[in-house]
Length: 336
Ligand code: NAP
Ligand code: GDD
Image 1 (tube, rainbow, N blue to C red):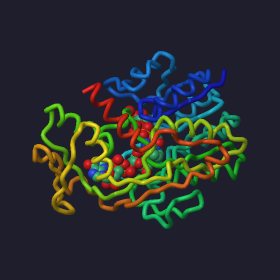
Image 2: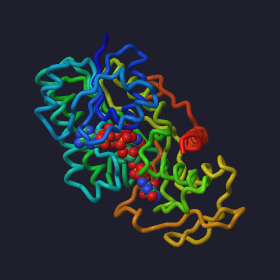
Image 3: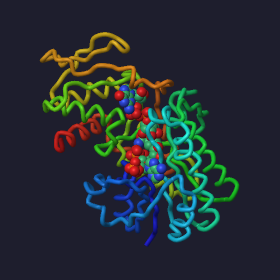
Image 4: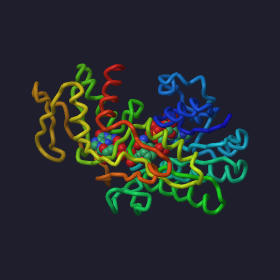
């Protein structure tokens, strides 16, 4: 039985990846940081909480990481834990640098010292492309991060590559473009939109307040991307791979598609922070804009080229943009 450690087990990707690994017969150790209330709802919803051995894991505790790896001697280590919210990284840049960047060095160094056979996966991100140097972005596109989160992740990406090249370790990165699902945290824009629109639809909320509606993202389904994460560590050599859909949509497109699922059409008025969205049937204001949700530096346009993953890993995303939006809206309608 293969042993895998998955950090960030309470997060969106942790849940999907754990399910994939359990279905393949792995023994899964889920790295969980201590919190005063349980946040295992995603694992509960997938019905896998009791199949995972939960282990105490804190990104900032080097000795904890070292002992855990020494004891478990995992075949595979998936590092999904991070301070993952770009917006917060502007408020907490130092913490983000430690948690999402430097901590990866503790993991790599522990693997090198006490469990060199372990294959390591780092959750890298399209946010590293930031102010993009070419469209679409490929593995060879230069990086230009635009947030403390992007800068921290770039350190983690390069130290992973450096340990691979210096010590011949099986250390790979997936450069994943935005991937969403009903398990997405509520502060990320897609889930904020689906959650709020359904609450408005059910009379539980007045309106939805957002930031920049013109940012474009290459949005895929997290379940598809976690299949890709697993494939990256099964490849014959350690390498870096982009996972993306190859299609991009604006935040505004996402809202319009989501509204269709609840038989609502938005009529837009104004521009920039003055933009307002009305329910075209009732004329009620349902969307407005606040500068609070703008970032000091924005990533305007992400579009990935995942040809390498498609050709070398035989990976293809199955859920379309429309399918993703519908899935997220239907799950909100079911649970709210
Ligand atoms: P997520 O839902 O925000 O999950 C993040 C996980 O990290 C949570 O389990 C969280 O635990 C844990 N964590 C945060 N700080 C920690 C700390 N100090 N010590 C230990 N654990 C800590 O993120 P996700 O969407 O699943 O993404 C997984 C990874 O992929 C992240 O590294 C993210 O940066 C990266 N990524 C995501 C995307 C995307 O579009 N989703 C794209 C590219 C890369 P709590 O539950 O206790 O907060
Ligand atoms: N969160 C949020 N809230 N974003 C908003 C809002 C709002 O009210 N209004 C507009 N946006 C815009 C943001 O400015 C950004 O351009 C876009 O919506 C997407 O924001 P997020 O959903 O927060 O995602 P992200 O692209 O910044 O970061 C996510 O994707 C990265 C991969 O590119 C996260 O999952 C990162 O962890 C991941 O690395």
